[in-house]
Length: 317
Length: 219
Image (cartoon, rainbow over all chains, first blue to last red; front, side, top):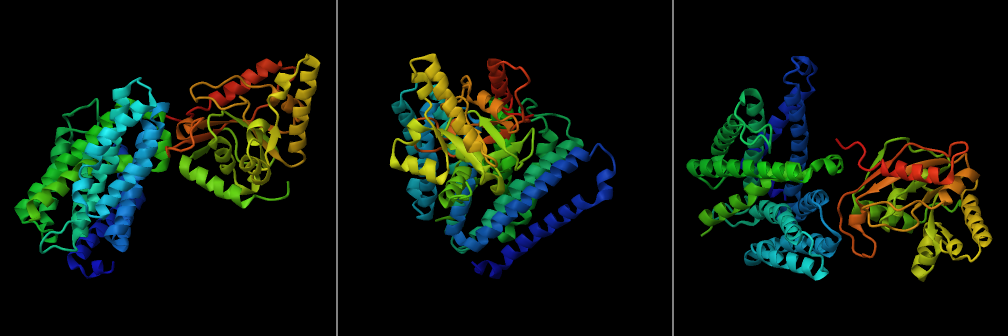
């Protein structure tokens, strides 16, 4: 665990994040800047929400350092559990899905993290996309309720993919054995988190400040082309500047950061579309009070598996 | 009822809270130690434990559930849970219906109300599911008259409606394995029987009071 303290580059990255967060938190506390101009108020409030969420994320990250790779898997399994719980609460299911849902929570999800822990790559890669894909509809079919059969199967499968399969690739980064980079997986995880979150917040801020052309206003009223460009350019630049902490060259780092940004944006957009589709207002309150894990990790879910596979493909012999 | 909270009861309450991820909102009143009759919709075995665990522990000590004798005395485990762990007031819900003569039904019904009034005593509160049985969660069943008679006999006890949302998906009737989705428990505004109010009018009003709490506050 405490090997992390001797990882100077990790300490630098972490200190940078911590410093930025402290500055943002202080700005948020500053009463004078709060009152000036009502037009910037909603941006400020949303930023406060983000800053609070980042403190939680950083806590999760510190726990990851303390717990080591296998402890982190447990931690991320808990996050998956909480995310899937929110997702399944939102998504309409029927009585005939009960047993399938039970299996999803208590068998499929733990197995995914177990296989990652065992570094059994061949099986953790196919557990949900292949095995669960077959298991879920079969199990629902056995229950005998055919109403909306395809929708129900798809909804459960999608939940497993996003909340478990995709998210589990973030802690899987810790177990990648990159030659010359062994034991520094935490830096990759932090890199992914920093680029992803900075992209998120820059998109929002730039979009609010200079955004004119909406991308898909029906899905996400705040997402604009200007915001997207600002987020992607800014976060890609930051990712590039962080190349020294990764096994990548600056150009490779730029490409990977760019990929994280694009995928993260897609993740956020897709999750918004889902919320609009199922009418989040029905259960929005329950989710909101529970912290809205799903809202916080939507972009990470799409970025994590692709980042994992790109790194694995290019950097593992 | 000065026995305090059984450790198994506390344990089960913690487990039920964990499984149901319940959020509690007091939308019409605050937690209070005064004598109350909490009444709610009923869709799951978790209902009582979740509602009970949502109350502060100093209040919880004096809150007893009303439960069906035929079900809760069927096996030794159930009997133990109902009688020893949760100090349930077990009522023979079928007896009044089975009575052959209206007078007999009246007599038996009166006996059930007596049992509930006794259970209230000087310091207890009750949790009651006036539908009398667990429903599917889609639509609440009609309320049985016990709530009305109890309210007439003990007008000093506050009637507090509560709505348990989503528990029918967490542990539906007939399932033993729970699915840990999230749920919401909303306590509403206390109500009472209006002077001269008809039994059926009151019961419908009470049912409406519970139904209206469904997803209250959701924007």
